[in-house]
Image (cartoon, rainbow, N blue to C red; front, side, top):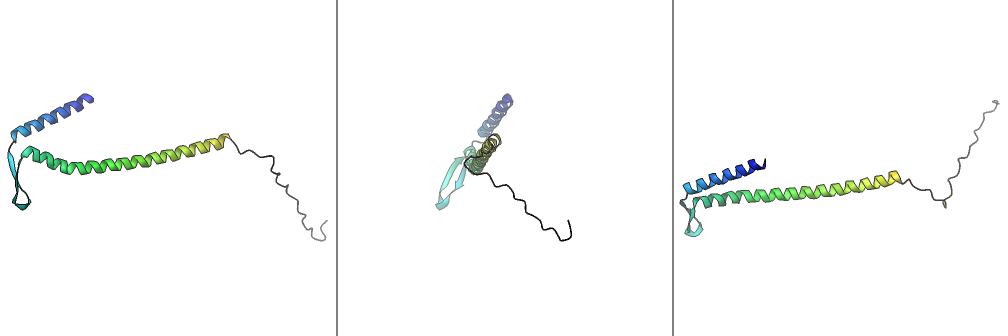
Length: 117
């Protein structure tokens, strides 16, 4: 698979080089204040590509960073819950001997209706 990646990038560089040599012309750009800039066409195309690509790339990296942070927080919370539940399962609550035992329930006499023996 690595070979195919390298082959793809080499082919892309070759096509870009052929395009650059075939279109090496200057383009005049009208700027503000009556200024005119003479720029080579391949340089202009690379600049416009980067102008559109870089903000999108930065946004994608920020979203991925935020999602990694949220995932990290969730994993830490899950690990904390697992350790708490594991400690509860292995160590039952010990009964301290200083505390008195709860009183035993007292039987309440029920009233017997007259005539029933």
